[in-house]
Image (cartoon, rainbow, N blue to C red; front, side):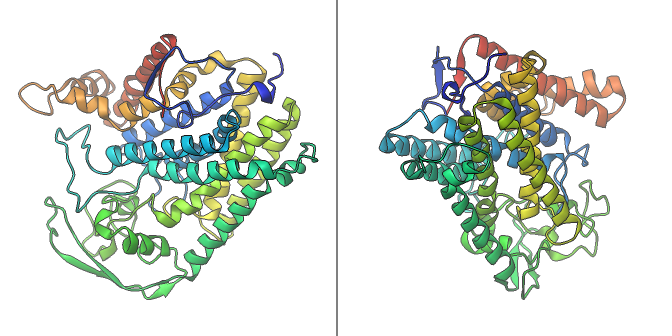
Length: 467
């Protein structure tokens, strides 16, 4: 296979493409196939863990400390966004135009994030729409991506003229050339660690707002009065969100509800213990303010991988840089966790979590790069490639349940008597005589594979939804 030269690579994430909604016959620059495949795999993982994680808690989010399959999805997205930033902005030499495009895409991400995860959409199971503004959720996946994308894109734009042009791109100088990104990363880490371990967390209280709960309207007190704690009720991440966002605007069903302290069925969901601590009933924002600041680090590491792709001209040099950094980050994350220095925690987005997930992302991308871009085996991963090239369509329609909600709106006699439920029950669950196996196969074939085929058809028709 011919060498992929950096100057020819114009691949973009769906979050960094030309503005607009649907585009007919877009330009066809040479793409980094492995990045499309990795993006598609990440969207597929999101669908899998969201829709099958309830039956298979081992792939769902860890209740608190730890790292399950679902906990890799968010940092994978941020890593991919980071890789796409230098590839996309490389084509826009004018600083003002680049800033305008970045700001516009940031606003689009914020809009879609609020619309899909702010509480307005109740898809796929609830056929109603609308949100009480007193309880709208301000944070979410796309909002976190928007923050990381905005910060790193602006650093990329405003540091380009300050590049050390006399330095030839090598394994060491690649860090010197883009030192501004690492300075920002250092500042982010210092601010995050200082607040996480130094901020005093006082006692706090909350009122349950859930008409289906026997505790609806009841107010609970949570005793803290500490600093530097990383447990569920008394960490600085939750404290900042409660103070800035307001507790009524946070996620109402955090993963900690499946912890051993809260339920007998842990790690499955279930009724709370009679002696469950009061914080089990409280909201918590997994995509909150301080944790999103830390999440910028995942994007910075992705940006570095993108810089390597642009500046190092041969496969072996790129892979040496990627694999070395990937393994180093992975081992650092493991050491920090198992020495009990800093636990792996997605909810807090701890440093060990950043290192382990970013290292894993780098290694997975490197593997796809070898197989797809060097060996030319991209046809083995066509479903993921198709999803990756139309990730926004699949994310909105499948991962956020908009298409399933639309189908569920056409029911017969009873809202639960729909085509979606009929397929789940009669084609998958009843055939395999197992709800767990049936739901897993339904998600794989009726959701992931189905949307891969749809994305493939859209690709064939040169139709892409891009922000």
